[in-house]
Image (cartoon, rainbow, N blue to C red; front, top):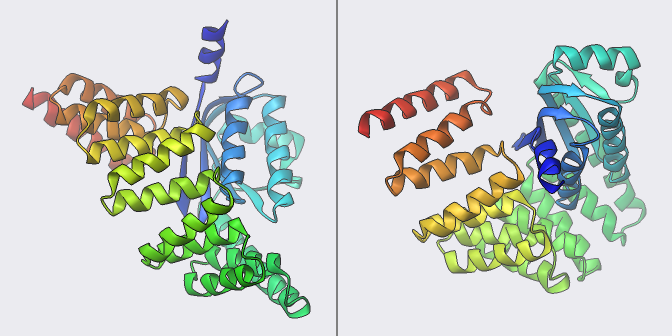
Length: 329
């Protein structure tokens, strides 16, 4: 029974990326009552990371049932409860006919053009900045208002302004873990690595199970070649979220840096067990297999990767890489 359930879940995979400060969530495969739980897990994860502005790309979603329709409406409610929003782009023809039939676009913004969706978000962000500026004028001791103003500036990549607002929130409430975390993000984007690390540590002092702070700290330690510290942070994060594919992937990258390829492979395999279409994990495991001379396995992973890459030029690069590996065998 467990095996059958896993086979059902494998009918859906996903990719997540950030573009112009907006999170893009690409759903691949089929969304129905059997695969819904996996899609919902990802939304829960994004909300936990405070990624409240979301574009869902459906160009590779080939089937949806009534449960899937409910997924979009419930996701919209969750995001709006956090002052965020949802926009849908690139509908597969079958999905578009279904959406038109039930008039889902009356409730959720649907776009054919990706840039149009991004532009709409930018307008929303400008309105949010105006709104929270008015709030802090009326309530100058309201920490949440400074925090939300900082978030709006972050969404516009105005990191200096964002940092100032988060610092004001912390001055009012030094135990505001989210404000410390976001101040760390602002510092990280400004290249102030040591300051970012200190803010992430402050957030974790307040909330030791703050997964996003653990991950962000791990990434900074990884970039700074403090690989043992990076591994330690990722392992702590996995104690809280053992089925979080991104953490397993990041942990694998840290082990790659230490040239512990056996452990790296296990991490990437776990990430792919959770999300079979995880582009970064497929690329990373192929790289490790090539490094240790297991060329056939590297070719296998690169071949699997092609179907999850949407850009034709990237597909051509992967095919060229596969041809190179075959020649070198």
